[in-house]
Length: 165
Image 1 (cartoon, helix red, strand yellow):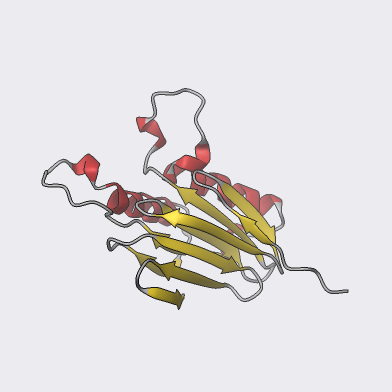
Image 2 (image 1 turned 120 degrees about the horizontal axis):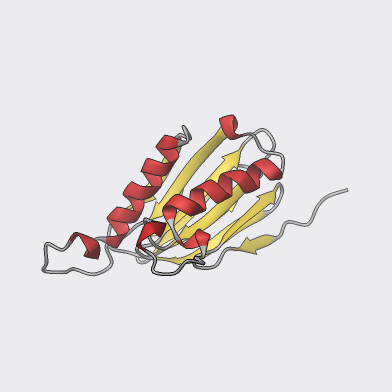
């Protein structure tokens, strides 16, 4: 019996986990970072659409954990493990983190895209999860789609076309 491939959409400040043969997709990555974690043996993958680097900056006690790099990565790892994946086999792919607007200021807070990338890399490093490929930075928005069967991440960048990483 052949499974019907479903494209599971991941919204902004959202995270989802799938098993092969399904596909994860998120759109509208500007300064946000799309992170994919996958266990290539079990063919289990998770995607998060991260908006901000650090949950400690939130003024709310009850936060959306998928919104922040530090909490979203932890939750995605746990969800993949619950689905049958193994932490030691996880690999990461990243896309997004653009600096969408040019500011004439030295204010570090305005560099949201680069800060998101740094926060995701730092969290992955602390969990010993290698980044195997990435398409980050620049000034253009992206849409990404991850195939859990092949482990390929399609990255469509505004005015630049599509690549696979």
